[in-house]
Image 1 (cartoon, helix red, strand yellow):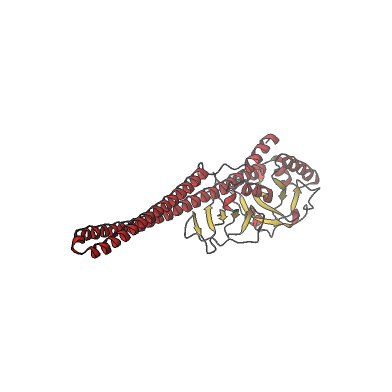
Image 2 (cartoon, one colour):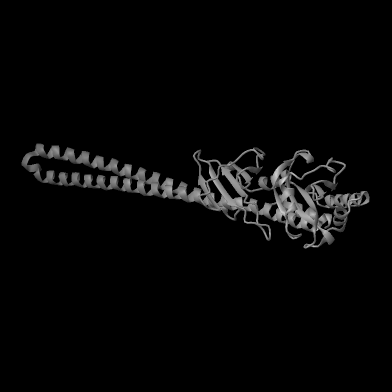
Length: 364
């Protein structure tokens, strides 16, 4: 695989696709509708108050007219009838104005509440989509890691050294692993181990003192030793690897088999250590949430442990208490008012994923 191709693949890691088209436009439209509704409500209330003011004046004029007609005695009786009717009309108009104000206030209030709910739902669905973007990017990237390890486990230098780990074979395979690392910059190191867990060769022996170390107690080695064929692989959890300067790595393994054949007898294990932290950080920091969302973008493993965070906090120590309610994706508001959006790993091609989630925590 060429250096140019690897650089292209590495660049694709750091540039996730844009968020859902029109998400910002939808938010702007919702805000505009909410503002216009509030203005309509304000105008309606102002006009009904003006009507009430006029009807109060009509009632006062009618009262004065009734007083004057009573002073006029029998001659003012006809005028009194007219004054009373004016008073009645004023009361009716006042009642209508009050009912209009109440109904408009209720209707516009309900409309504003509906708009707020629609806006929050649209925001939540957008965050779920962005969560899916993040976890899909890492899935596609890690699928390539599973292909790499199975391919390199059949390399003739790897097979020859696992078959007969003489000094010349170790030197040759170490050179071969170093060449691979020079082209695939997303790896910290590649190790060839025998079936007892002893590291026979390393691609960066000048940097990491791992040759001769025993890794038989690690989970990924135990699982790799039991693989059924050369077509199978092990995808380890993200962990800090002491033999690599305590760097965060995701280890992928395949069994090395006699003759480099998938059904050959197992003769060793090839472990490749993906340089996890910078690659994962590039993904979560590139998720296109708006600044107003005050969002924190995370990748969490099947135990809800934070394995990547856009703010760099809580890595491999913090756990996010997701409320999945039996769902693979969704959003909700937690007790603190934070919007929590999540999406489970969909996997990619033959990589089924490890039960990880993309998660976004957005402030109110």
